[in-house]
Length: 252
Image (cartoon, rainbow, N blue to C red; front, side):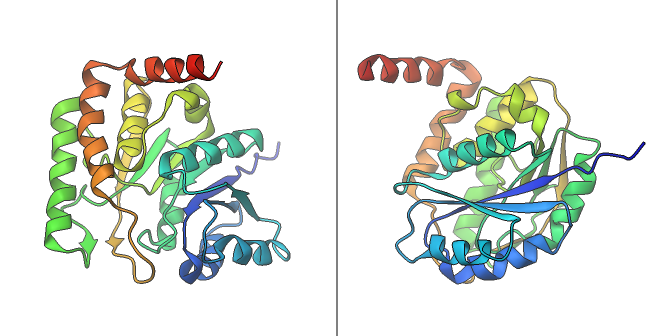
């Protein structure tokens, strides 16, 4: 009996990534024949979506979801997750568009996901593997990781990392509509909910590179949200569900 070929989808959220996306997509697709790419673009003014569509004309492994405006990282990934499940992908990746995540690491994550439910490309599992970050930002990231571990008790060295691979069964088990966090806190929330379900999580070492082109999407709002969200996850786990229900009631 022939072994099923497992399909993998790399979800890449974009906002003004025209300088990177044309170079990144071929690098990603070249890592493994099972890999396809989904770009989730938030109506980038710099024409990112148009460049992706040009690639799609000659490559059926490239897909795009276009959104009306800048709606945030968390909702971009949720949209990508739903697309992946609807189209029967077995392995689903999160990946940045700015080359801070090295595409050459994709085969390592694919190898690890065969025996795990969630694989995290970790900057801190073997020390601090970050290149060209200002000391202040590095200190913030390392401190945030320790803060999250202390409050939540999650045994994850890099809980805010965004280079990850899920088995589809993990995403099917999560209530995707009840994940409303963004930025750092989105990564924390998803990791926490996977961990609370007792699923297999593995961190593998990667080197994280500061972007060369474009501008960072980091903001004080994202940091503040992460600080508060950790406490809500640990002590008020139904907070977002109640908030979502209130919004639905107001709309109805």
